[in-house]
Length: 175
Length: 430
Image (cartoon, rainbow over all chains, first blue to last red; front, side, top):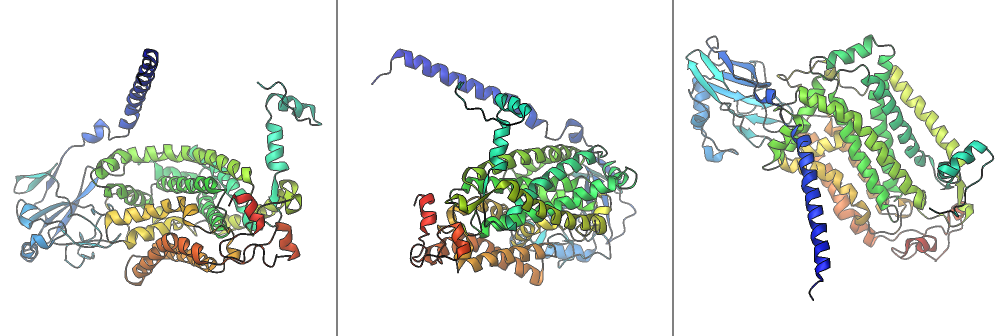
């Protein structure tokens, strides 16, 4: 049965009022939600240049980039070989060592465990380095290898590689 | 408006003046004066009042702490140390607040244990239970936010680990985490908003507590025998009987919390939180506050990031549906010979989870956490529905007064499985 024109008009008014109200409310809420996202000055956090000439083979330094620790390691021949020997397909987060470095002796990583954000141990000689001789996260027991790839424990992904470029043989620009 | 409204008359003319305009006096008289409490309620029933008092204490001490606290990453740690050393009685405010949080959880855990053991969550108090679980969730959020504020090592890394839980959500996780933090890692934006939220959430809790209390007053309090009030002989007025009883409980509680505040204020504190936050160094063992440890143990027991996070939140969410998982009409575990032991096992298991949650997740501790995790969810999904079905409850007293006369009906009620006494039957609309 067809509705009376009068009811249709009332329905239309009701629907358009509710719709307009909903859109208006959403438009009002959006600035508040968006204000919680990183601010412009946070986003503008720049890049960092690091002098790597003093780093000996087997040594690793930690620098701060955008508030996070970044590991820069000059790997030994053994460590490079160990990283290359692994079949990528056997890994939880398959990635070849060659895809994670620009020059194979230099490994640059964001030093934040991909599980829950702790800083893994392994930067100091005296640190625990885990079962794969790379890094070991003390919070929940994730083991990373000499390429910073996840090998054992709860972390789902490899340690991130930040964007970086070699300005010359002795300087890396991170970011 | 209703012109025929009957205005309650009091002797005091000032009260009458107010009552005529806003009937708040008769409301308080009804809800906190003449309110009938089952006369068999034991001291477990004082923990709701204790929790309310603690909430008020936390809000008051928190407001005074906020007067001297600076929510900035460069100054937060020092401002807390200044409160401890230079502000008059600042040390007292802070120790009341930090230990008060721990005692708040002790009280609320006992309150929850009471509700579970004596079946307070069952008909007709399900909504009351849901509001209670909601308060518990808000409390956990508030205490986590507050723990970040002193900006020590545990503050910083606790905040990092907990906010990273959100990054486990597929697709939107990383974006959500960044939005929550206001930065790519825990920083000044995070500290600022955590302070703002930590300040406001207790007032939200206070509001929900109001609903929680209003809801329990509709059908009245449960009691250790889990049967309803039938006659005036079964109850006593809240004033003065229960007020005095709660006051006794409050005195005992005051002694306990004072002993900790004055003689062992750091018993429940983590040493690492007296080291200023350092984003480049993670402490060897990150431990949550002990009162969140059982859930942390569940998180770590699962060797998968998303799975661990889901089970940890699931462990709290499951509480919401407990009233519908338990099919038994008998409320009190005192009359449930089988379920009683599983229930006690649940409490022991929860305690064990909390214990291993404070220790490194490896070897035997990890095994205990995994067994504990299985029992935790097994209790809700298998034991609770199944036992309610097969168990034969023992005989319920006919009324609360009969509990004292030991006059338990030989064959009426309770004898058959799942059939409660007439005392319950009448009110539960079977």
